Image 1 (cartoon, rainbow, N blue to C red):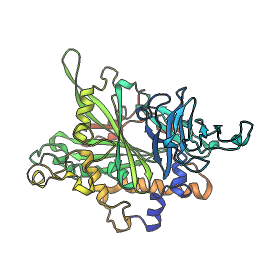
Image 2 (image 1 turned 180 degrees about the vertical axis):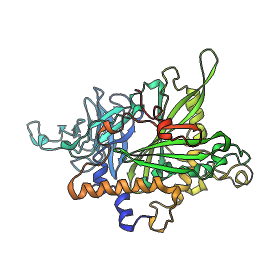
Image 3 (image 1 turned 120 degrees about the vertical axis):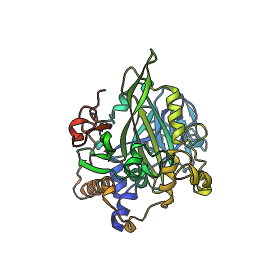
Image 4 (image 1 turned 135 degrees about the horizontal axis):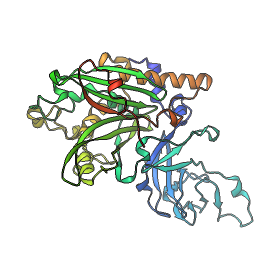
Length: 424
């Protein structure tokens, strides 16, 4: 468990908090590119690390990310007009470009030079992988842009979606790193005893710290079949990688096994809300992600048609749509969708979980190490300005996750070594 002080240290992300200052050293997902729209379209609200912002695309296609409250009288720039190279406040007409410079002050004499003294808070932003990324830290410390392998994939081979989560970001990360829960929480067919995760419900964990965070293997003994091994990656401060094999139908009608790599980024909206970015990509050039596969995958997760999107319909208020009859006869939870099952248990812990009351075991080794890495990086940053892990994209740009069936006694580090290397 964490001490009360450590729990506070990790879960508070506002400006001026230790964890908030560390988070601001990274490029952070702010919104989806598709939500920003076309040049001069309406702005959108963004709340990130406890700050209220607006994002917009100006006349030349550049994306701006400004503090929502106008520097003049604090009116909302979300109400503003996006026109002619900037966002104009509807209150008195002050207009800001994507860098936060005031480029027009029409309620003052044309000769005024006061507009040159006004600066709206603005954060640099870039577009990559269908996401608008923001940098909210000091300009002189800005790191290189993120370089995860899926960001380098063509649009035909990748997909990303959002889901809002009504609790602290740390609960989301911990759920993603917890491999044994899939045998229970995600048991959506109580009659199926032959699934690897039903054969061995207590996977053995091997965890290895790295320069970017850590990697770990969940090893399940599946009898005569050998060991089923899933190797996950954690890239600080909030990204998880995982993998699975799917049947892919070639142009000739032949079905072959290909990997699909997936993961999440649990981005703090504030201390008690999180935006989860769900990404997937196909690393095989001959196997783009079909619309059918994406829709099927999103629906199974509970994010697609009939499920959840960024706007949540199944929440604590309606017990996450739990059906007790389905729970009694068919599934462990009676809750539809893997994604919603995760959200239900994580949100059920409260807005910020009290980790002083936990009783952790060997099944929680990955969670324990993740917490230790974040605590260590925050304290080192506060005490001596040490850079947190994974700021340099070179530390993680070459990694992948993997899942593999191995003969017993064969080390996964050797058998899966090629599978764990990015090729794009």
